[in-house]
Length: 181
Image 1: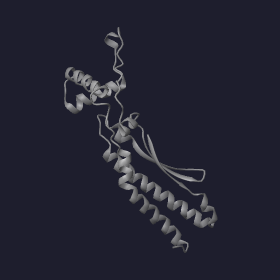
Image 2 (image 1 turned 180 degrees about the vertical axis):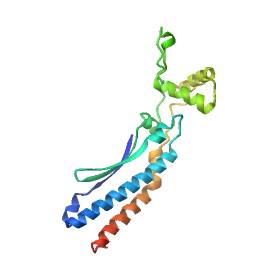
Image 3 (image 1 turned 90 degrees about the horizontal axis):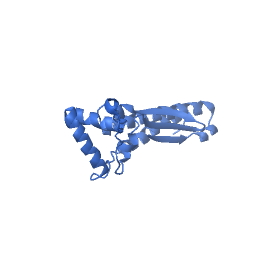
Image 4 (image 1 turned 120 degrees about the horizontal axis):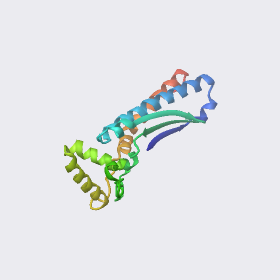
């Protein structure tokens, strides 16, 4: 999952080299501060979960590509999109196969649900097994999937004015340094 901001810097070439350098530094500073602010708010809105992988995996990356400065907000958790956007009704694959015997294991998704039930609801393994199956059935049926959390969208909406102020402040400083307004 990724959300980002892009700024085209190709028009900076009309400025003297010293101004270009200061503008690039100002933009990069504003982008780094802004993406970190958005990350902080996205983490506040993200569910904690059992292993904290979603919240812990949210981070920012600022880089240049040709004439663009890019700031991405990313998450390393593989289920980030499902949490951000919600899901349609679906069956969670169990991972069980006939004849598996003692060596049978749950799928990663079902194992995560089982761990969540045990840790969040404080259920014994036997009860957790039953509750996990009921939750999986509800996701596939009555519940109609999973609800969208929208942590990235909420973070963007909450911080967009602050992001604009950051860019106005740092670009303004760079221009004033060279006699601009």
